Amino acid sequence: MSLIALGVTGGIGAYKAVEIARGLQKEGHDVVAVMTRSARRFVTPLTFEAITRREVITGQWKPGTNADIEHISLASGIALLLVAPATANTLGRFAHGIADDFLSSLYLATTAPVVLAPAMNTNMFAHPAVVENLRVLRSHGVRIVEPGSGYLACGWIGKGRLAEPEDIVAYVRHVLRPSPTPLTGRRVLVTAGPTYENIDPVRYIGNRASGRMGFALAAEAVARGAMVTLVSGPTALEPPHGVELVQVRSAAEMHEAVMARAAAQDVVIMAAAVADYTLDAAPQKIAKSDGSLVLALSRTRDILAEVGALPSRAEGRPVLVGFAAETHEVLDRARSKLTRKGADLIVANDVSRRDAGFEVETNAVTLVTSSEVEEVCLQSKTGVAARILDRVAALVERREHPTAAS
Image (cartoon, rainbow, N blue to C red; front, side, top):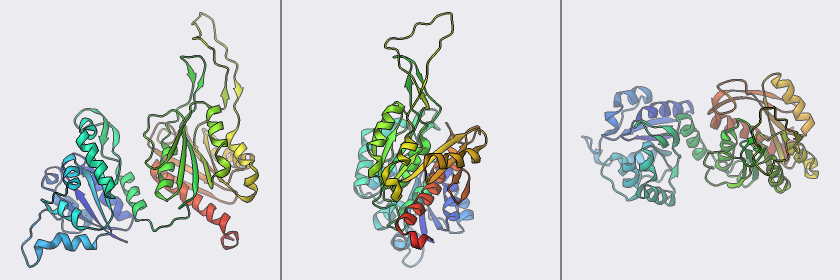
């Protein structure tokens, strides 16, 4: 498909660049690796040569006629420059136009899209100099794949870990995607996360939803050119760049936020785990006693069903996607929900699995429409989001061009 230059710089995340190269090849791309001197202290060029079947570029100068302008030749031939990991030093050199090795010279010489995946210590990533360098790079049109949070090689816990290879590959896919897409310019509303129903000022009833699936869907929709509103319950996740974020806490607040906007949307995706029951919260903390505590729960309003009953739904607007988190009879319950709620698509997943659903970064789902059932195998939630949005895009096109779709 395309030739991609993969810049590898000197960080412990360099080993992940091997999987990134494999992922890009699986997408059909040719990959040429460009390694800095520091990167070669972590991974050998031979590893990348074996995978890419191309000579790895390791230096600015190469013997031979016109070899000193190799970076110019490569710069004009690549479809994209990806640097993963991108160290703080690399960000600084790129931001200030310092070209003292092959990779930095290639960055200045190419007019292809540039994607950087930073990786570094938490304090380094938060340092004002690095923050400013990232701002400058973004102002120059450079795309940034945000690092993840968790345990770092230095032993710290925080933000700075290189994004997962499949997420970086998915980001590259977005950048190289021909535009416009069926979702370009469309209004898309996504709900995400849990809702919390207060028992008293201290306690609440909640669920295990992390918000990752909804946030991945919002990011995917933005990448496809949509104007995205993300209505999110309580979550520790950082919202994707480019979304309008509406933060809510309770099911009632999510109902209000969604219903105020739904009729104006082209697509509504209800990925949030909204509480089915709520209660009248006590004004003061309920004192502990020796006996049992009985709470009187009442049903919350059914947001998915109410959107499905909007008058505009008679014309297919908005395309409506619901989620069915089940522990048994997953497919049967998804089909029933599709009919009862008046949705176009139900995304069903078995949340009894440890590797899918809540509190993990992977998912495996079944996409259910009135005429089709599609299994989406276990993969990152970013990958699952792409498959869901593919189906949503097809539904949008079918609505706009019903004769062609039939």
